[in-house]
Amino acid sequence: MARSRILVENWFDYPQYYDIAFQAHTWQEADFIEAACRKYCPFAVRRFLEPACGSGRLITEFATRGYQVTGFDLSQPALSYLRRRLARRLLHAETFEAEMSNFRLARPVDAAYCTVNTFRHLLTEQAARGHLECVAGSLCPGGIYLLGLHLLPLDVDPEDDARWTEWRGQTKVTITLRMLHIDLRRRIENLRVCLLVRRGSKELRLRHEFQLRTYTARQFRRLLGSVPSLELCNIYDSRYDIEQPFAVNDKIAYCLFVLRRRLPS
Image (cartoon, rainbow, N blue to C red; front, side, top):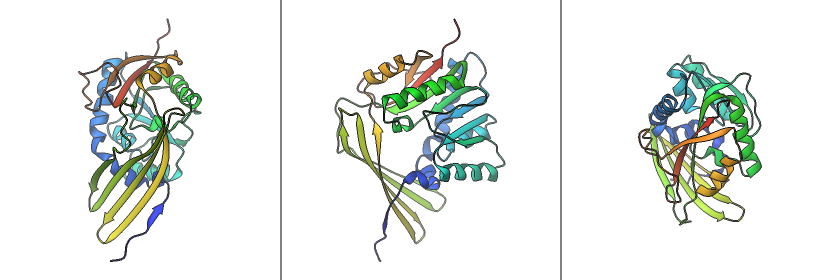
């Protein structure tokens, strides 16, 4: 059997496979976001925003649950995939093209969310702060923002690969994520993702290298302190247990920060 060719392309331009790769926790994430809204919002949440929504797995889930949802992304393939998916299911969501650190909504939303390290694609402090300010300006006073990212542990292991497999129907998707290099001074992490897709006798191999900004617990708290319109309510981990918040530290990797737009004094 001939060896398949490896495509060196942006894996975000293959939203159908990206969607499968992260499908396992969609319901759990959506349930947690709803629980956080009930706990931390002083009003009933009806309208959601998802910055950098990608394939829109959570947008589709919340639209199915009856919420009004708005999402944006820079990837046209991802937005096209999401719009087709919504149309097939007779669902509606507002979608548009925009950057995470420079966007504006026609009217405010009740809550927003951004999970799975998407925020770390903003590679400068200025871009990260601009994003938080844009989100704060898009929230109703008292509205919350759930922001999920991996903090940089003190004992970084550059050989620590992540590998997992997901199925959807007859399509098998295997993802291998490897850290190539980390520059602690510049706070840049270089990663490579390898995607292997098999469906029957067909096979696709894809390789994509990209960068993420790193944050220690202290660095992220300092960033939050530079955006006074947002207050930190609580922090959770990947167990998505609304009854079990924890204090941020340098040992917990994945953190879900519950931020709230301050109410007028």
